[in-house]
Amino acid sequence: MAGARGLALKRPSAIPGFGLALGFTLTYLSLIVLLPLAALVLKSASLGFAGFWDVVTGARTLAALRLSFLTSLFAATVNAFFGVIIAWVLVRYRFPGRRLFDAFVDLPFALPTAVAGIALTSLYAPNGWIGSLLAPLGIKVAYTPTGITIALIFIGLPFVVRTVQPVLEEFDRELEEASATLGANRRQTVFHVVLPSLLPAILTGFALALARAVGEYGSVIFIAGNMPFISEIAPLLIIIRLEEFSYPQAAAIGTAMLMISFGILLFVHLVQAWARRRFGQ
Amino acid sequence: MSDAAIAPLLVSETRGPAVTTERLPVRIILITVGVTFLILFLLLPLAAVFVEAFRAGLGAYVAAITEPDAVAAIKLTLLVAAIAVPANVIFGLAASWAIAKFDFVGKSMLNTLIDLPFSVAPVISGVIYVLLFGLQGIFGHWLQGHHVQIIFALPGIVLATIFVTFPFVARELVPLMQEQGTLDEEAALSLGASGWQTFFKVTLPNIRWALLYGVVLCNARAMGEFGAVSVVSGHIRGKTNTMPLHVEILYNEYNFAAAFAVASLLALLALITLVIKITLEWRYADQIAASRRH
Image (cartoon, rainbow over all chains, first blue to last red):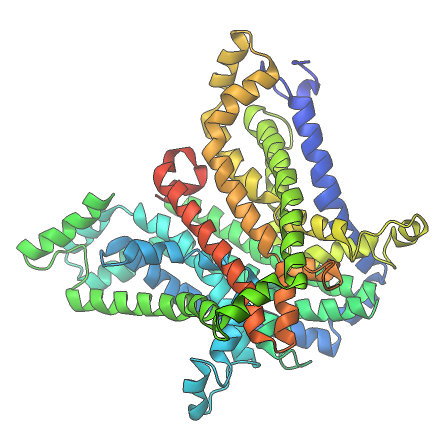
């Protein structure tokens, strides 16, 4: 059963099982992922282009997409800033509890989103640990777009830290010595030598956090308040349309969101290709 | 790694400020900012889960996680994971065998497609199955005629869970098996082992820690998935409610103590997952492709 099945499409090999392994892989991939996703695109295509455009640019949809995108953008920016500081501190300094904090960075990956959602809501509600401190200042977090942003910061943080950390670990410190030898002070070395080489990693982490945040649902709906036009995120609107049996509308919003996240991932791809050319990694 | 990182700090103590680290006040400020951020955004929510869970006392906690609907939710969550995780393990093994051991046209395309579910929003991962199998979906009419229920039943929940956890195992195994090459397998085959013997006695032992790593992450996501499952489940209490959905229902009924009690079980699962993950990364770093960072 070993051998040249697949002819010129496959390089000959002494290892058996190619047909079985690839056949199973392609069948499973098609049934679970490709065909269902095709159904989504097909269903939204049933509206025709004009119909699709009407749904996606309808006032409520547009408000939801804008809210999802803007809060995600803001959260990813906060994560890019603090994520770099956290990665820097974890890689460069030694302090008590460092390894424990390092391990906890992955918590948002492991903690179910609904759990994060109710925990954050209870913290930031007007009678919560943090909410009760902010309430006298007139700051309302839970049930507002600010609350949505807080939840998105929570789920996006590991993306930045975990993409920047390995690059920083492998950064050649002789470059920093060379920079100092040539008369740069520490601030100049950090901002003109180290941070520019971290830039591709920071941008990648930022974009991954953004892509995750745009589609996030579980951690957001509890803290969001879910008021149409104000605090209603795009994924929630999809569910609402689905429950109204407006399948094509739900599919259209879903397709629009897919296009946004593929756009972001294309950006990641371009950044990495640029970084390979620029920094030769 | 640690020696190289500590050296400049030691130098700074003996010869004045070292050129490759920041001054002490700057270091202290950065550490304070980083640690405060981690405590505020990660540890405080985790602590809140357990504090809220026990707010009504131990008796209420035990009652909340042993009442029939909660038990049904726990059982369903375990059942779904027990189907979805092995399915993705078999897929991960097949995909990594094909991709890592052979050269064929379209290989990098296949590799990209495997990661596709990670870039699909959870809600959409549920919606696609409703569009296929829902009452007004593409196969909805046919399924109803044959009395097969997929949406608002176990098959739908399992499908959505498989979709969102699809890449976890494969993407741990593919890079590792590519690194390991085919020499071991070729040696076994030339010594007369059959294909399956080679797989079970040579390949599998080589990848066992990476496989475990992938399974642990896959399982955590399978048991904790909310968005995708929420769309397909129908939220039928005691029947199609998984643990995260049960948490949502209790929370929306203002039954906060019970909601957090069930949530604390999921938080505990997350902590166990983290401990296993870190242990594998520390002990078997060279045998897990994903832990290139350590």
